[in-house]
Image (tube, rainbow, N blue to C red):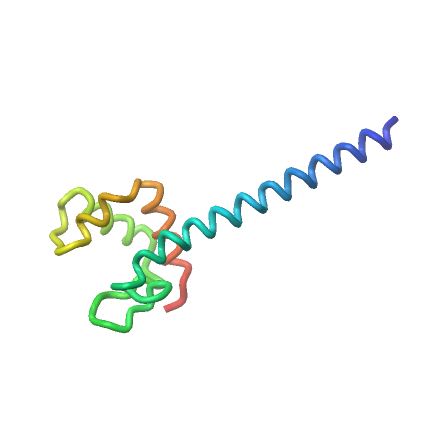
Amino acid sequence: MEIRLVTCSAALLLVAACAWSTAHAQDAAYVRGMAATCTNCHGTDGRSVGTLPGLAGVDKAYMVQQMQDFKNGRRPATIMHQLAKGYTDEQIEQMAAYFAAQKK
């Protein structure tokens, strides 16, 4: 009886770990997809090759603050204020974390 309980418990843990892994991979793909919307202006993975600033390696807190300033109209912009309004605060946090983790 105890062996069956241990086996069942181990199986449940394995299923939970697989589910978490799949959800995490989906979350990572979702965030990468959001970050890809920045590519046209800020370069692939935030590595700008033009005149606009790169986002790769930018401090997360700094990027969150800048995006919030665009979103709330505290920072003037030609287009970023409109783009920033399309993201939730959680999405801004996620993208800022993604870009902060990228190498310059």
